[in-house]
Length: 565
Image (cartoon, rainbow, N blue to C red; front, side):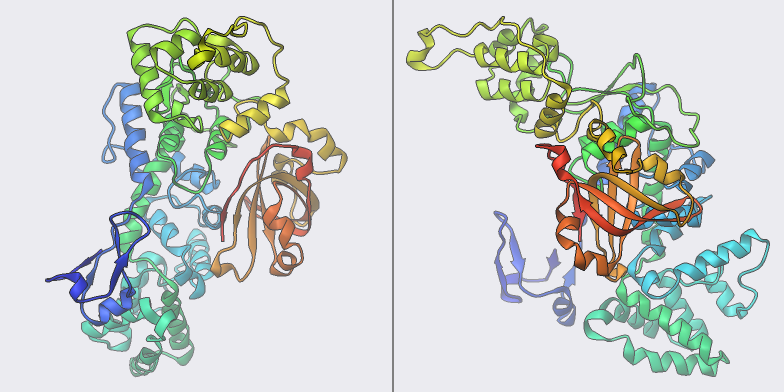
């Protein structure tokens, strides 16, 4: 928002926004800066809400208060989990780019997370800081000093980042100590970095930088390299303070995922919409980590997802546990809340919870009467599987829902159907389709398990097989498309995430293939990929040579992906 001493509409052109009772200023932030008006960005971070909810769940379940300040610090299990790129749902490090960086950077302490947050940004990437920083870490691991070739004045600025400028503050400090800038000129350089891509303001500082570096005795190659790195910050880089604040949330959310995965899942689901992954992907990941997830149920569910005592198996039918399991305490089960049922009004859910608090429901008719539910509410609950304890399987529940509410007007006296009629249970595949239609996910078998024999016949490997495959091996992978990314810094490369019953496969699509097979790449629900394994340590990608659309194998199943272009 913008602050002024007087009326804004007398200073700048304004118009009504699409959202009611909102106003939009027709100028951009550079126009406002030019006339000296103050603009303040107020950003919402969904992870803050998720952390608050998650910590409250843990505190209530464990019987001891847990806050952001009291989370155990520097736990090696947390860093080991992140170094495996086991970061689905973790703040800021759940994207494909961050998951690729984590096993290469191998964070071992908090400041490593500060760097991790900042380095996967357009500025450091465009400025060529990523590889030099990783190489410097390798030198440290070998017992070498990556700062040995730097002058003392620069060592003082870049020591914490191993000789590579990563933060905006470092660029300003370098301009002062290495190029003779004044503090005011360094601040103007910072402002120019933010506007360079739009207005080219950084160019006028290049000559001053080069001249200052030469005067201080730095050779031309070093000066050019430093200028290139500074220009990279014109593509957006982080201040160190910003990165440190975000790193705190990275560690806190990673600690929850590592040691309290049930509460972490419940908190993420209760905070939707947010983050990089859909509820379906979050649930599948939690089940692969041993979390028991139970269906929404009108007899026990609250509006939000909650924790309850676990019982029986704590893994899904195709669960894949993490390669290094942390010593987590016994985990509760996650009971899905009524919020997870698409189309159910919160007011209807509140009436259900209030009526249930008075006494337990005896059947669907009792539920409908005491919670004042209409036929639409009951059908929604039945389709979402929330009437299972009162009515049995989904077909039976839908049948009972149709007769539980009296017909209106003259039809009220008409004979109703036999609510007690016994219907045949739906096939597993039918339940799967209904789950995705009403919930957007399933707690049953993964959709790919139903067509695994067909895919195996076509020689498609599972995600687990691809993860274990050697470098450069020709391979075929297939899965539900859960995410597509085409970031501006990737020069036209598309990143696709495929999911099957064993895990996730990361696919790289080169720009030329994207142009050739754009329709399939952007439209397929079940995609097959013919390609080659690319392995760098723990980081495994399937580099696509050709893709095919096998969505027909899914029938009517709708499993939308989250796409970021």
